[in-house]
Image 1: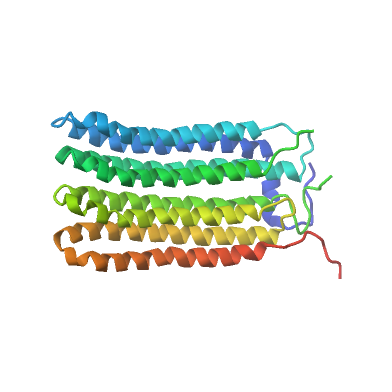
Image 2: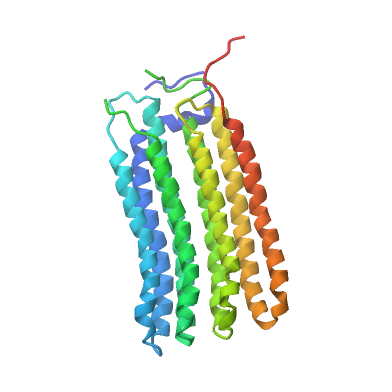
Length: 175
Length: 168
C-alpha cells in the first residue's frame, strides 16, 4: 500500500500496522492481563490464608471465597476474550476505514478489560489477605469486612461493562 | 467506498478516541482499587480490637469505589461520541478528556486510600476524629470531581463535528 505523501504525520504509523495485529493483541491482552491480575490477587490472598490457617484451620473454607473472587476476574477476561475473538473477522483486502476502526475497538476493549482486572486483582487480593488476618483473630469479623471485597469486585465489573460496549460498537466488513 | 486517509476524518482518529475512553476507565480503576485496598486493610486491622466501628469505617472504601464510577461515566460518554464520521479534532478532545478524568481519579484514589487507612486506625483510638477524617476524605474526592468536570467539558467539545471540507 503506497503511503500518502502530503498528509498529517501523526497517525500514518497507525495505518501502517495491519488491523489484524490490533485485534489479535486485544484478544491476547484481554485474557493475558486479566489472568495476571487474578494471579496477583490469588497469591496475596493465598499466602495470607495459609499463613493464618496454621494456628486457625477453621478459616480455610470461608476465606476461599476471597480466592474465588479473584478467579472471577480471570473469568471476566475469558468471557471478553471470547466476545472479542467473535468480532475478529477477515475482511477482503484492501482494508478500508471501517476495518481500522473495528481493529482499534477490539484492541482497546481488550486493553480496558485487561488493565481493569489487574487493578481489581490487586484490590481484591490485598483485601482478602487483610480479611484472612482479621478472621483468624476473631471469626465474627468475616462478614462485616467482606462487604469491602464486594466493592473491589464491582470495580472490575465496570471494566467489563465498558469493554463490552466498546467492542460491540464497531465491526469488520463481512463482504 | 470510504477512503482510508482523509484530511479531517482519517481512519486512525478512532484510535485516539478509544485511547481516551480506555485511559479514563483504566486509570480511574487503578485509583479506585488502590484506595479501596489501602483503606480496607486499615479497617480489617482496626476491626480486630474495635469490631463495633467496622461498619462506620467502610466509608473510605465506598468513597474510593465511587471513583471507578466516575471513570465509567466518562468512558461511556466518550465512547458514545465515537462514530463513523469522527474528526481528528473530536478524537483529540476525547483523548484529552479521558486523560483528565483518569489521572485525576488515580490521584484521588491514592489520596483516599492513604487518608482512609490512617484515619480509621486513628478513629478507633480517638472517636472524635471521625468528622475530621470525613472532611479530609471529601476534599480528596473533590479532586476526582474536578477532573470529571473538566474532562467532560472538553470531551463534549467533540460533538457535532462534520467531515465535510469547506473550501474557501
